[in-house]
Structures are given as C-alpha cells and as structure tokens.
Length: 172
Image 1: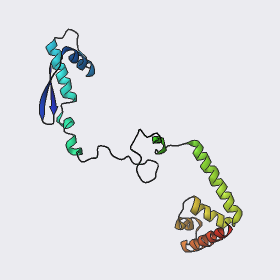
Image 2: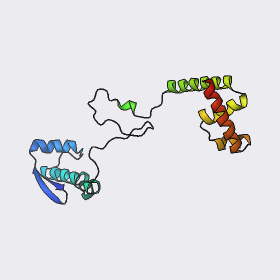
Image 3: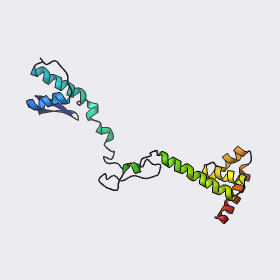
Image 4: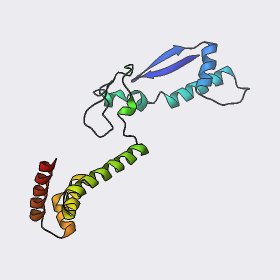
C-alpha cells in the first residue's frame, strides 16, 4: 500500500507492506465489513489518515508556534513568584511541592496558629486594640476598611494602630 502523508504543503508517499497495512487498520480504529477488497481497505485507510492527520491546519501548526520555547520553564503554582526545576530526573524534585494543593490538616494547623496568636495579642493589649490588631494584621484588612467598619476615621485608626504596634514591640 502507498500511503500519502502531508508534510507542510507537500505530499510524501510511504510504502507499507501487508503487515504494516493491517497494523495501520487497527491503529486508525477503522470499522468496516469483513468482505471488503484490499483496494477498498487501502482507500479507507487513506481516507481516515487524511481525515485525522493530513489536514493543513494540523500540519502547519508550527507556523504560529515556531517562536515558542520547546522546553519552557514551568511556573510555580503555589502562589510564589518564580519557576520550578525542569529536570524530572532530579531525585529531590517533587512536583507536588510546587502545586497549590489543599490539605485539611494544614487548614486545621493554620486555624490553631491563628487562635494562638489572637490569645497572645488579647493577653497583652486592651480589647479594642486587640480587635484592631487582629483585623489589620491577621485578617488582612486595611486601616481604611477597619476604620469604616467601626465608624471612625482612618487617621485616628492609623495613629492608634501605630501606638499599639510600638507598645507590642516593647513587650516582645
């Protein structure tokens, strides 16, 4: 059998023996009646090959992507900046270290740590100051957001925040 294969914009012909033709029939997953002739079988193989692989857009994909790095650096997926090691044979390399995966025990540990920090803050400063520090430092609110939530001006809150932080620095 002669199989026509498109390479860019030209066709090349590949000679296939009977065994390779049968393997191609199985590889392309062609289903037909068993009483078809060899010529019909070859035509079905060529048609399926054309349909799957001889499309111009399939073979010319590299025209659009020729400037893309064939071995790109993979970006970290754990929220930090940078790239990860590209050598998969490295024994110290574990892709799971770089993926953003969820671990419930980590969440529990973070919650426990959060509560411990809240207890330390509440033990050292007044309740109003503790609420302010927890909201701004641990919960990630801005001074303006916290001021709006308690109905005060951002200027007053920022002064109280700086005073409280300085007091904590003296204590710790």
